[in-house]
Length: 386
Image (cartoon, rainbow, N blue to C red; front, top):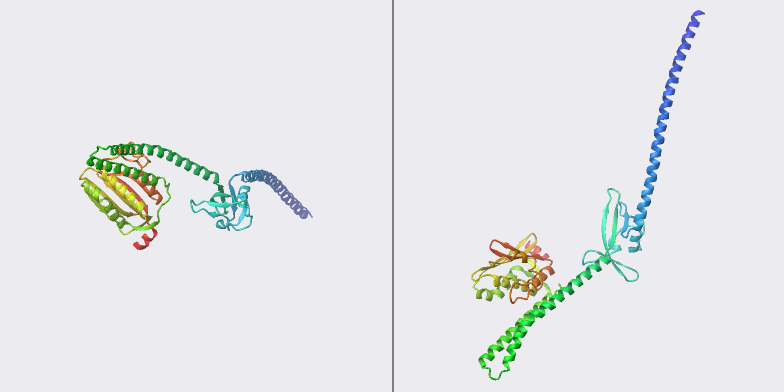
């Protein structure tokens, strides 16, 4: 009996010990649960705050998109419209969400400068610039900017610049005409003298013709300049070496008169698209200028070469360098350093070159003064060269 009591006592003691451990573990677990609940509550509060902040930010962005003067179209990765703001709706009233974005079907591209035309129901036309902002793995935004007003300002500025140029031209032309016209009138008045010898009469008549020819040349230069980039002739494909030979024949008498050393450097076979008379006139003008400023027995060169898909033409002479302070003005209309120059020659050359989407610049190459032209090669030139 005593043995059973001892066993029962040991069992109760073990039970109490286990119970104490369970109570301790429960209390510990209860503390951990309380701590986890506290952390969870804090995390939940932070999420609620972030969610509210995100909602406020989304509301601000929505209001900003609605108020923006720039049209915004949101696209998903498949190119489907998922959002359109008010400015975009005004430009594209037929554009709706969930339709496929096809720019060429919505807007007409302007061939002149790459912008797009947006035609309204009332017949009005707006010019729109389109840009895409790609989002990393989230589609993209299409930005539509109405540049109609900016384009009108550019056109007004160009018109004002043209009017200012015309005003300067009129003043310079009046000044240029006055001297040869006064000389011609003086000679013409002398022709009325009854006692004028025949020899003097013929000489005076020649002087009058000479002055009138100078006036005609001046008027032709003026007309060439005021074309404002409108090509007067028909463009054609011109073989470069044939062009150089044509220019060489025209300037040969002037070269012989000044006894200049003349050299023409031919290029590989190439073609350019241009109005032949304009381009021949521009090159002739450059060569004649080179002859005018080249000392007797000096060297004048006309070279052509094809570089990086462009035709490079160089007119060089052994004349003195142009003063650094004047180099920025030599292509300006009516600027000249010659006593009887009109100041339109280089301006016309620059106009012709720019009409061909080319460029011209002045430079020095050793002792040579160089005018360098870069012109685009015609597409068939590449084909024929293969």
